[in-house]
Amino acid sequence: MKLKPIKAILLLPLALAFAMPTASADEFTDADLERWQQQFMGVVQQGRDLWTSPELGTNGVACAQCHPNAANTHPETYPKFQKQLGKVVPMWEMINWCLKNPLEGQPLAADDPKMTAIQAYVTHERRGVTLEPGKH
Amino acid sequence: MNTIHKSRRNFLKTAGAAAIGSTLPISLIELAFADTAENFTFAYISDAHIQHIEGTRFVRNWDRGLIRAVAETNLLVPKPDFVFFGGDLAQLGTKAELDHGAEIMSALRYKVHYVMGEHDYYLDLGDYWEQLFGAQYYSFNHKGVHFIVLNSIRTYDDWTFNRWPSNEQRMLEMAGLDNPNGSPFMVGEEQRNWLKSDLSKVAKTTPIIVLSHSPLQKIFKGWNFWTEDAEEIQTLLKPFDKVSVIYGHVHQIQYNQIGNISFNSVMATAWPWPYPQSYAQAEQYLPKLTVPMNRADPFFERDATGWQFINMNNGNADLHYTLYNNTARSVIYNTKTKQPEDSAYQSEDARIPPQTHF
Image (cartoon, rainbow over all chains, first blue to last red; front, side, top):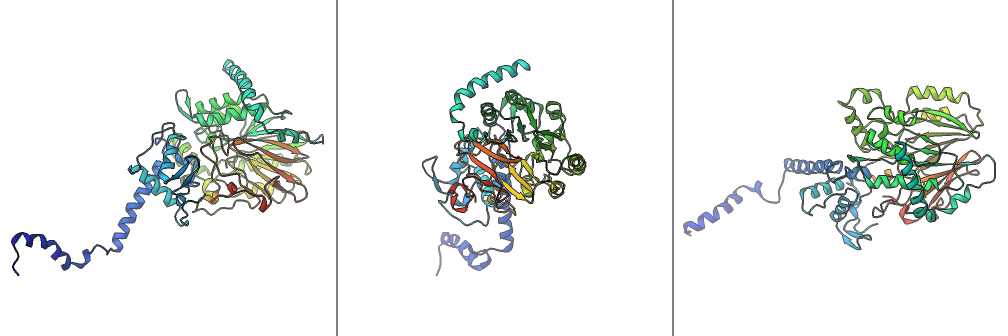
């Protein structure tokens, strides 16, 4: 079968993919795993820096003052009913409550990289604990 | 400075009596009327963590905790014989923080004895604190009880003197409770020698109260709920019939009995800390005897903070915890079981869901 030139160009990447099975989407190597873990731990470290920073709020109070090693934050229980807010909330809403109140600061957007980093740190400190959404 | 002190004192007298008089738990007051002549009471306020922001601004939340404790302590009937402050008056040991804390404390109408905390110490190794409050360790006798105050938050000389480029840096490193760059607390040889000599003059039947900032027992090293030479101190105290160690630092209710020594912690006025078992990566030794305080509800700013009223019941320390947003707790020395026990929650089936920490 003879293809028209434009179709030949479109099919070229597909042909290459079949020719190189190592580039398949569902395969990854030890080197990939290591790189992804490094990426994750980098963000965890950013979160730890924010957690201990007197600059996150406006009054010099840091998250770690009340939550050493992020203890008593229970990321494995979210989303859960937060009686003080009167509804089921994901963890970032509770983090924002803390930013606004004890830290007298501004809330972060849900997808703010700082919010991601804080949640990465808190969750990392809780590694190994059974996931129990809704638990009090 | 005296004028400021006076006006502050008058303000607290009026404001305290109006706002707080009606909520002071009456049970504490009745217990103070125990029958024997040997009984007396003292109050214990600890861990205020007065934190300077800039200029004349301080963290309001922590200020309020201490102001409230001072106001309530002034309203105690009968009057306590004196007040102890258990350390960490300041957050970063600065003159501004220690002065501000001392000003709030000056409203107390009782003699106050001070214990050194690491947040008071590691900026200038206690120089300014000593000017305000006196010696870092000392002892005195009161109504047949021998009181000993130790500075238990010192550490290895190499860490203190050689590790950090500035005093400010040293203070910041020790101020982070969970900071892996910190160093274990210890009483140290100098004070152990002093303690040995001090105790040699005391009859074995004299009740002894030791006041330290860190627990003179080992609970969790990661957060310095720990004193490196705890066993050596315990050995020095072993020959005496009745010994109580009362400590701050942990911002939570803890109690224990090791041989002849009763251990009781006191609450912070600033903020509560999680129990070590709620850090999933920790290896920790919270005393089995301890019924924990309730998990804190941060929406109540003063929850899981408070101060203590201590009844020296025939030489045993009975602690009454005044908890601002919670039911008051009492940890009383049981003369039959020979250990401190909670008067309401000690048995397994008496405990309530908020006392479960995870």
